[in-house]
Image (cartoon, one colour):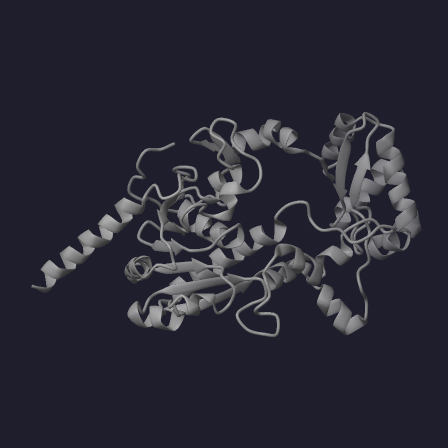
Amino acid sequence: MTGVPGPADGPLHDLRVVDLATVVAGPGCARYLADFGADVIKVERPGSGDTTRAMGWTDPGDDVTLWWKLLGRNKRSVVLDLKDEGDVASLRRLLATADVLVENFRPGTLERLGLDPTDLIAANPGLVVTRVSGFGQDGPYAGRPGFATLAEAMSGFAAINGEPDGGPLLPPIALTDEVTALTAAFATMVALHSGVGQVVDVNLLESLFQLMGPLMSNWRLNGDLQTRLGSGIPYTVPRGTYRCSDDQWVAISTSAESVAQRVMEIVGLAGDPRFEGFAGRVAHRDEVDARVAEWCAARPLAEVLEVFEAAHAAAAPVYDMAGLAADPHAVARGIVTEVDGVPMQGLVARLSATPGRVRWAGRPLGADTEAVLAELDADSRSAGLDQV
């Protein structure tokens, strides 16, 4: 583990972010800002700290969870007890020096702690308070606990996810939390760009709903509801995953008409007027899918990929993490980085002139409390001298 965090670098090096959030969505927002240089100070409760310190798989080298090492990366860890008046006073001092506060308490909790955003912004007019919740800061469900599962059920995602003859399926990853983290980071930067201190209201339900594309438009205008189609989608055929003769799987897409025509040629359906255009193939979905499945099942994955690549058609192997880690393109791009001995995702985006950097993995609980509070004391003394 890196000893003492060095000075921040990167395009956001002049920003200070106080991360009061827990679990994935809120801390994920702060992590994206930290990756590009923001001085993110993670404020955790005494004892156990953030929930992700005890969630999921651990690093066999030190028994620290991998979730924490990812979400806590590039952050400094400070322990403050928000039930203690002295610690709350220290937090207010910290917030007076901050550009951003990220929190994901239930709506109203921050106010009950004596940290009303209106008061915080009055004391620090440029402060952006990013509030991440399950359902938003107002509305009938505002006070409900915010869990990604609820958003995945209510947003329409689960209803269209699964096999036609099966039940609705939830995603097997923290999809909603991760999408909300990106949404919150984007919205926070928009608010900072405005130059006006304000509250950013981001929630799980509406963040995932943004991924539903025109499904609501289609329902309200045409009365159509998308059904479960396994790996298929209503307007592109063929599109799905297909088993090859060596028991490997390939994913195929034909979302461009030119690509669809190449695939029809590959599998021997070219020239049949029934399969011309998107509408024709959608109308004969079962026949097209059956033919593609039959063609793939007769060939090993490597041959399928070779034929599709030669035809400039869209196909890719279905990877697990082992497959992705070994893929030559993934290796060449360095999409997996390693910090403090822990492999994890690299930066979400590359900036040619002002890149971000992964500087350290999640640090021990409270590792930076003394240093951060000492900085506040030094700042206060400096301000006092300036006023003399």
